[in-house]
Length: 144
Image 1 (cartoon, rainbow, N blue to C red):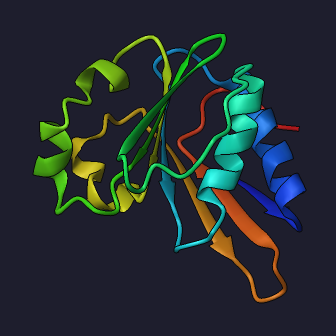
Image 2 (tube, rainbow, N blue to C red):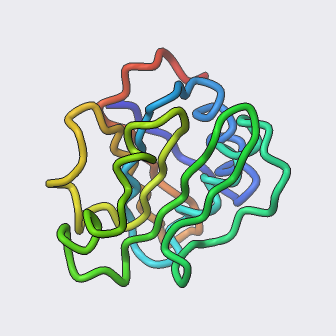
Image 3 (tube, helix red, strand yellow):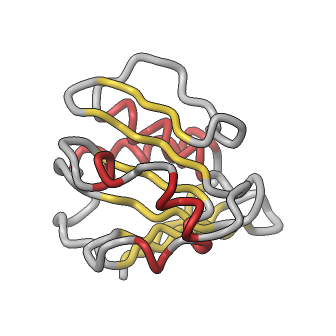
């Protein structure tokens, strides 16, 4: 498991950028953390590394946002879903097993539907405004 602490939105975006540089086609990141933990913020950095120029916003109300750069980024938010069956019914297989990177916010609700190779990224906000970030099941090399 890798662990990091970021002290600002800029540092969180920077960490996302470093993660994004290491991602490969077919990678899936299951993001976990409370409301306003920084899940979309770290996704902004990942998108920058993938050379995506669109503004990254939380997909809470649209459920899935698609962005295109050097490879597709599928940014999903399953907060409003009732469970794994709803996720399957969205038709996400083409995204999860396609030529892009998938990021799933609130993934705790649908972990049973994700492949074993899924990277788990957990963000825990601290009282001082910093973020404790854990990355598990990471096989893409070091993040410096």
